[in-house]
Length: 328
Image (cartoon, rainbow, N blue to C red; front, side, top):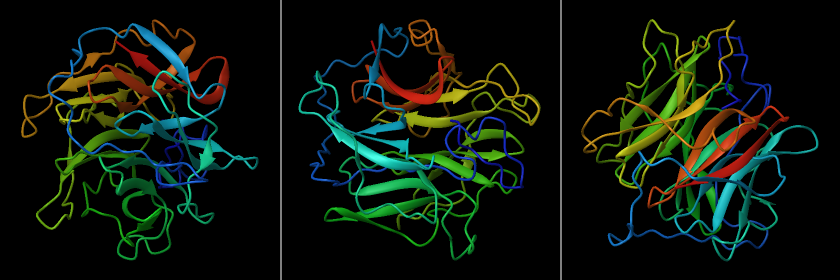
């Protein structure tokens, strides 16, 4: 979560590891001969589901030595999307595939049909079938941001092998205090859109539920660790297939201000039904213990059985991000 920009002209200390002016794009489709694989059915109820209280027991690097961030996978875990920087230090979206989950992914290739040099697109998340993509972008919005420059949540639909982006952001005005930088969207199969928004060097998580026309009304803040007084930042929501478990990153118990650059680490919370509030967050055990060089982590994607969490890590050994998978 190193790419956020506060659009009142001030940039939080932790932004510029990815890009100094924008954000990056996550998506998936067809690129360079890669076959897009997607499984759209619900998980088999006979599949054993891991308990979120169980510590992760193994952490493994994904994509070898590539400096990459913000992973998103298909349900069968054979296609992965992520961003990497080019020779000019600008991030672009890539994808890679594998024939078996026991194999490492093949060579990354640029995602076809989404690149636009004029605007930054980032942190995409696919629907179950891969035909819908939500992502953060500073591209123009004819309604609220005609000149571009403010990060907003957009939606794209796949037609054949390419995606077509809708011209405007996909939901109504959220809390005006926080709707300055909207990022890391996650759209559940039940039509819940989660994302986080930056303002005054702090962030918090929001939720909007699609109406019968597929439109997203004003977003409502999700209680996690942030409140009006503690200056803790929360972000990067990642949900389970049933929408009952949320992994997210937070600076808790430390503040995040223009003068204090606190690291983000991964936490988890759950709810009984999609209509309930999430409960008290818990620390995620087993990641930092098995990756002691990590100074910051952001969740990226959770497997259908809740047993594997793909995430981004920044370590003390390198300023570049790396992708890992934690297994329990």
